Image (cartoon, rainbow, N blue to C red; front, side, top):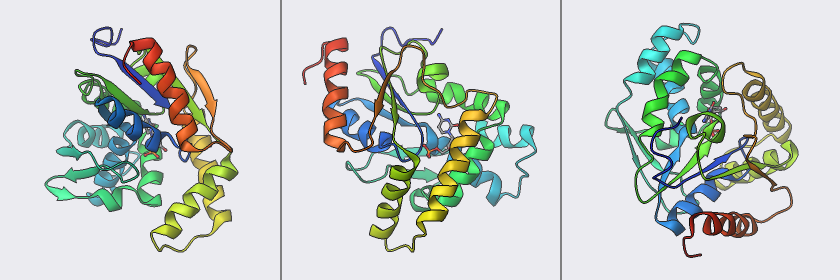
Length: 233
Ligand code: DC
């Protein structure tokens, strides 16, 4: 049982990177006035911390100890802007969104002791008036009792295009084929891992966002949330 989720309304949005779930979660949390959990940021922080402190990613106990002791603060950003993340008093928001930190995150995320160390920290985000939780195992593990569960997908090609657009907007050079390959490697690792793999919860509603605008996805999900929790649209 997930403690407290019968009292605090929780919406889980799971799916692969680039499916649009980050923006969707921000839009929902802002619209509803609810809290937001970007669980991927926690895995990215652990990956970065291990990298910075030269802890081998094979050393599960030490990486889990880092995960258990992260001194982190999240400051919500505007919609479309990433959440500001402060690690040990330092703003690591930009480094956190890099392809490298995503890659490190995906590697530490296979370690069961790391996932266990982050569990309580994630559940603590479920406070009134409600929570929108963004991740891979929000509906299957962390908030298994959530009232509304969404599994958001898009084709790997479309996700690579979206990522390329974001990187270009930041003035970074882009190789579409490399991006696509990285996305496919990460998808494979995230969905094939033994512990809490990326997969839809049995009671999740699947939405394929390929060819859909984010506003359309938002309206669909908001309608589900409003019906389930009787909140105004
Ligand atoms: O959502 P993101 O791209 O920031 O996530 C980075 C990595 O973290 C992703 O490749 C898999 C892992 N992750 C996870 O295993 N479980 C979560 N709930 C969120 C992210």
